[in-house]
Length: 149
Image 1: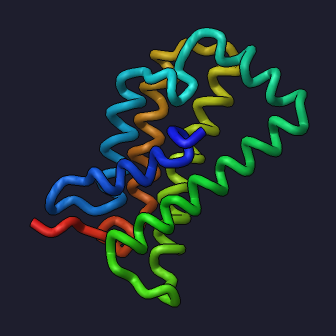
Image 2: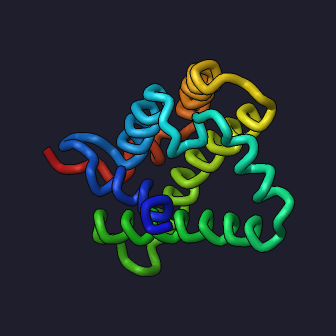
C-alpha cells in the first residue's frame, strides 16, 4: 500500500523548479489519468474489484484508513519541504486540499467505472473535472510550496 499512500507525496517531492505543490499534483494527475492509468481504476474489471470492496466492511474500512494515510503523508511532506513549524497550520490545510483533489477524482472515476463506462471516456471526463477543481482552488493553495528556481 506504500505505493498508494505515498503517491501524492512523491508528486510533491518531485515537483519541478518554480512549480508549486498543487501544480505538481495537478500535472501528475493529468498525465496519469490522460494515459488511462490502471492505478486510478481506469481498466476493465475495475467494477468487479470495487464490488468486492463494497460488500466487505473490513475492506471498506481499510480503504478509509489508506485515505487517511495519504493525507498524513502529504501533510508531512509539505511540512518537510517548506520547513514549516509544527504549529503552522498551512501544511495541514493545503495538504487537505491536495488530498481532496485526488480523492474527488478517484471517487468520480470509481463511480463511472462501476457504472460500466469505458475507461477512455471516463479518463477524458476526469480531465475536465480536474480543470474544474483547479478553477476552485485559491491562490494560496496554488502557490504554496513553490520549489526554488
